[in-house]
Length: 73
Image 1 (cartoon, rainbow, N blue to C red):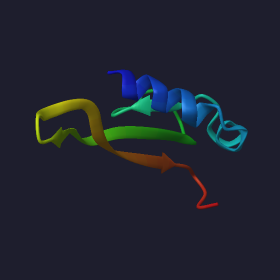
Image 2: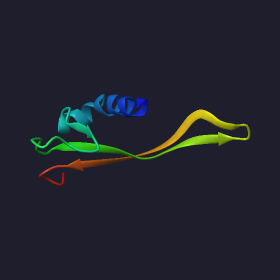
Image 3: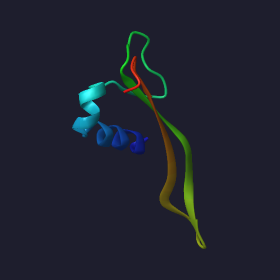
Image 4: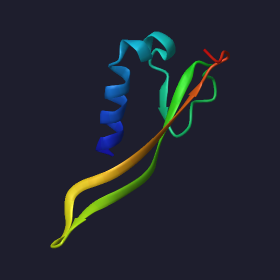
């Protein structure tokens, strides 16, 4: 899905994020051997935008990002 690759690129382009998790950002499930800190993202809804003539090429997407660490900060 194109939105997932663009989302990953945008999140990992932030030095504030990569300073904390590096590149440990995964879709839906992390690999078994990965230790915190890391983040997981989920597409929780993806609805086509409607207009009077039918569906158009835009989608309304909701994303959830879960962050995991040994420390709250």
